[in-house]
Length: 69
Image 1 (cartoon, rainbow, N blue to C red):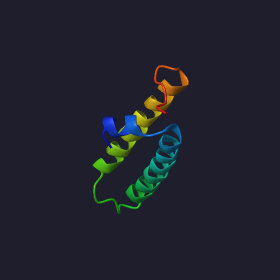
Image 2 (cartoon, rainbow, N blue to C red):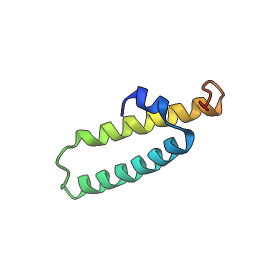
Image 3 (cartoon, helix red, strand yellow):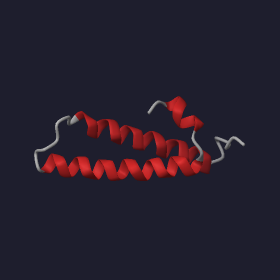
């Protein structure tokens, strides 16, 4: 997901996306442990997206970013 797309999401959508990505990361790690993971770079992509979402949510908490109405 691109940063521009993250900027357009609401706080609730960001939290849902964060939860989904955490579950996806858990599944990817499980697949890696069982040597069933086809694309190991997918783990890196999901971790980066989680970090970007957390950054945006933290900016909302610090009032650096305002929610659009």
